[in-house]
Image: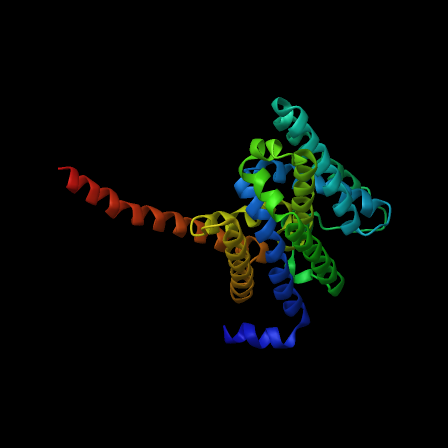
Length: 283
């Protein structure tokens, strides 16, 4: 542990990595809370994996892949959102198609990019240790946007997340709010790709809020707890991966997964005495 903190005070790449994890936890905790409550993890997965196509196209034409990621994420969010609203019976088909086409386009364009030797594994599994100052600025800006939108539309997002029909009866523009919510999720996915990559992005998006949901009494508490858990998982994964020389993104997700299993087991243990006591009373 002391070795890590000594390295942290010396190497800027570790400082950037730790700060990136903290900043990413803010967006993931907020957007992930809506994903868990609204139960749209499949939609989030479709958005996430379609992003590779935009990144590959941006690489091919000489643009920043982050720009391609943002554009493709927003486009995928709108397409999936419109299909979800207008033709629910075909939702899973469109999500699967965008998922596969986005991945395939990304692989093809990255492979055909002239003059570049792009490591596809970095996109798929991320590398938080390669986060730059520019990446931190982008993550901070996206965090600010997500926080602002959540603050402005907190009650509206909560209404469509818990009871969409009631929100319609109250005259809320449900379709527009739903698309805006998916766009916020899409921007969060862009942030998390840099941390854990495309393959593991959904795990980091849903695990902290899922754990938080077991202990929070309100949507706001769930968000705060999810953000805090995300920060702990990211920092803990960074420390463990550095000490044991393991892939950082995968280590972060494994720690989050272990915490989820512990929370699940703890819940069952808490319920067991209550069930037993009820049985004794009934006899």
